[in-house]
Length: 255
Length: 320
Image (cartoon, rainbow over all chains, first blue to last red; front, top):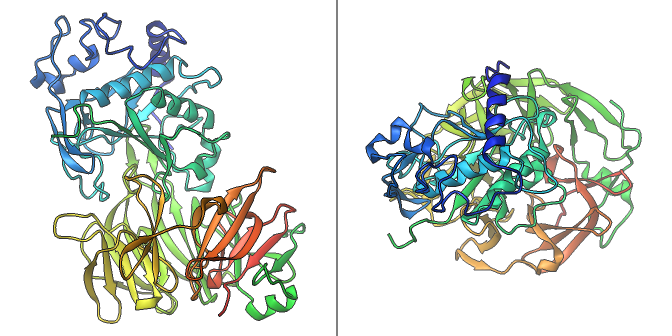
């Protein structure tokens, strides 16, 4: 396998994370309060990284003035649309977005979902999600979210999820490099970083907006098993190379 | 390959056990065991317990070993690893389907990128969904649905709707059932009647039919994630066995005529306790401790169980 993510890039990520979030300081509300933070200059709950992402220029964000959030999840996750979707920056503190599709086509979501991903990345990098777990050297890698307008995503999601900007896929983490990890292939299990993956999932679970994490409890072999009712083993065994995070509809279900 | 520590025994009904060896000779399922680390497939003699290496995977990885119901053939997916530069695949992993005899002789190699397959159609035929690997979603982007004949090496493309991503053979009505997207005007579960080649929609929620076809199981990944049991004809939900018996694993024996639901629960000692629950009679028909041997497969849908003492238990399909 050829991997071109350099050690320098990883060190930059790690250093940035250590400046930005001290261990133990994370919490569900820490990026959506009114006080400016190192990642949100104007304290409007929209990170500078998102505001300066050129793909989001049509929102007219300004990092020096509070902006309003116009993103809306219409309908439901498996039958809906994404209104005024926001594009996830391709890289951020503690995460990369991997490309299943042409760049900036598969990574749109509501602001709430973007915040969930960014916060999980920061917490994961800062090892701030649990006392016992330690993050691995490999950052989180997020995948499919929604298409820019939302709606059915065929042929890639025939189960019809990922429609209204409230869901994201993330890879199980390798212990050797950034990259995909299909745990249904026995030989791949050698490269599985169980502790880091668990830590990453705990980062998502620390966010109260996360209402479901679909994963494969057989291949992931978490011991002890996750007790959290938010965690759901996929009996259909279709989450063997990623786990799937769903947040609550940020603007309610009546639209 | 030798598995010297394994002692293999066979039970038909543990609640009414008989002479083990005699039962084994009567049923004699073909049992194949997968050595995941060595990528070796061995045939395990259900009577003597000896294991004999019959096939070594020829590509980067192997998976999804399935012995045909007849026991004459077995199939597996072999794959070539992709090239992943970290954040983008330069070359996707690619599968092929290999069919071997119980002696390990290669009968057919289908180079199509098979993603899911099932033995079907009342003989040694295979229905396969091909497509390219895709991280996330259902794991692949569907291309075609094929009917493969390992003996003649023929490939027949079935005329089916797009985007199908799951397949099961239903012997009870000679049909292949597929999962598809519940688009407007299209059913989530589609039936392909093999003798006539016709496709029709169904009102069902899932394709996990019981051997007799009287029931089906459904777990909605997008719903509550729990198992639900339905009567197929009425499509009405019926109650699952008492939860104290354990959580649902699936149908115990995919072939035959007993609608046995396999349940499991963790034991305080650390192992698993399994129960086979006959849904029609609403009663327990078998119980055992151990765990299902990962990657193993047996003809007639027999169960391969490693017991707490490391012996292997092969439980053939009960005959009525």
